[in-house]
Amino acid sequence: MERHADSQKPVYAWALYDWANSAFATTVMAGFFPLFFKQYWSAGSDVTESTFQLGVANSLASLLIIFIAPALGAIADQGRARKKFLYAFTLFGAGMTGGLYFVAQGAWLPAALLYVGASIGFFASLIFYDALIVAIAPPERYDRVSALGFALGYLGGGVLFALNVAMTLKPHWFGLADAAAAVRLSFLTVAVWWLLFTLPLALWVPEPAGNGRGGFAAVAGGLRQLRDTFREVRRLRHVGLFLLAYWCYIDAVDTIIRMAVDYGLAIGFQAESLIVALLITQFVGFPAAVVFGRLGERFGARAGIYLAIAVYSLVVLWATRMQHEAEFYALAVVIGLVQGGIQSLSRSVYARLIPPDKSAEFFGFYNMLGKFAAVIGPILVGWVSVASGSPRLSLLSLLVLFGLGAWFLSRVDLAQGERMARE
Image: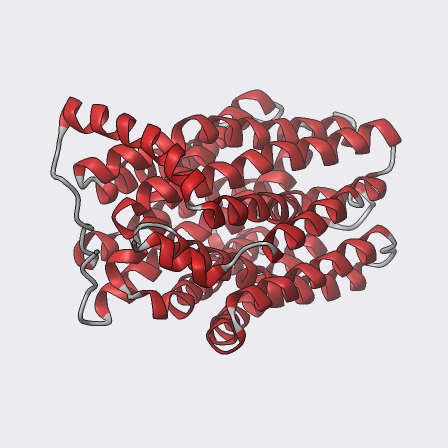
């Protein structure tokens, strides 16, 4: 079994990594990159063409993570190297993000490649961040601790994003020439923020137990462990069922997160309105994630996930008929109420179902399936948008994914799965 930290310091240090990396998720992935990609790096292109290019970039990053995530997790478990892998991918992701500052107008391909690299750093670091939860809390506290991480992520991402938005709206206040210069500088601020707030995890979060192997021994042992884990997933059937459920519903959630700004632009909304809506989601998401953690402890994490799936399904139906920017604001509030909840409760449920001593490897599978789903979602939305000529119709495909996710989740016996993981 993993050793859990005795004080709250490691818990808050761990949660602050969500504060750190959410700057990328908010300012870059959800906010300025899709906006800047369409209006600056793909200037002059048709809106459906730039939507397709953005979908391909997102899907390529996810596809690469699919191939490396489980093996990286297994190797990190073998060599007690979860924190080292987290640092390495954080440095890589932050470096690629900072590189976006130097991309010239119209150069959509270099921008897309840097974005793919930054996304790989972001998603790969999450494998090891998620896996460290077993070192800082016992299973009965997973819901609350996981929710704390997402809550701080929403708050931290929102704080920096608010500053970045102010820079773009009033660039002269910051000594900048125009909004484009402000957006480019925002990519640098994300890189610095990401690196700076990784330091508490480096200092105060313990490395979970492993066998201490290093070098080629860790690689060979990790690959053998990966082979064994495929068998283990078959034995722990509730892990497999939960992964299928997660695969379906998180695909739809991630697609909404990544494509919301692009969708708003495609149906004619102003960029400033879309950015304000993202800010609303961040600051609503902060307290809502904490509340979902408490709901999970009181009523069960599965009930909280069902609630979030239902709300998201209504959001999709509403979005396909949306006509006014005020509706986009309302949807931003509703999404903020459930987005952190479905993410945090999914992480805490999965942490209960897996063997604690193989957490990085199993979270590699977790992130792999989440990213494999995200290969399908953005391309599906982009393809339907191009084929039909209507961005609105493309959203309806997400309802199928939410429905399948809820059905697979209903087949998971959480109590039996937790017992099997600790046998």
